[in-house]
Length: 244
Image (cartoon, rainbow, N blue to C red):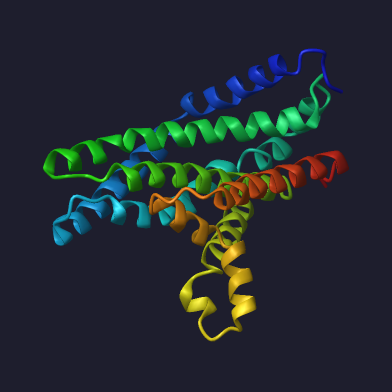
């Protein structure tokens, strides 16, 4: 049941979900792992290539997100169902869409905050040489969109099970498949038509386009459509009350 002021309950639940990350060690462990692994891998490539570029960083970012995004979403529904608080949540005067959006935007904002902490990398590289800002802006935009896609997918999968480990592994596998299906090692030897379809469906192909600094409408539409689809599926699961 929706309220007359839909933004207020959405904001209250969003704030509660976001604060739950920072009220536990999970957030700080996640941020530390992200920054340590990302910086270590980047500077290994950076000093080998000796180029003022963040291309190598944005090439490894999807793989880091591949593990970290499911670790953020695995508990969002699974824990609520296991503890029994989901039934209370669904009796509140707030629509199913508002609940799903509050959970999604809270984890997305947390991911964006984490990503912003890596801005020291482009600042450092820019001081060491001439840094082309186009791919940097595209890389961060692509990372946010790809991260949002991973999170929407993980949130949906979390709604299907009470087990956090199952939610984590299932989200990781699904995200991995959707990321690589358009890769050259998959499409090579396939008929052109099928290869084009796989590239169009691939999370990785669209990320690569944006990370090069080429921000095309079709890539943005793809990510927004992908995120909407899995949020919509999440709402449908809630409406079915399939918590058994």
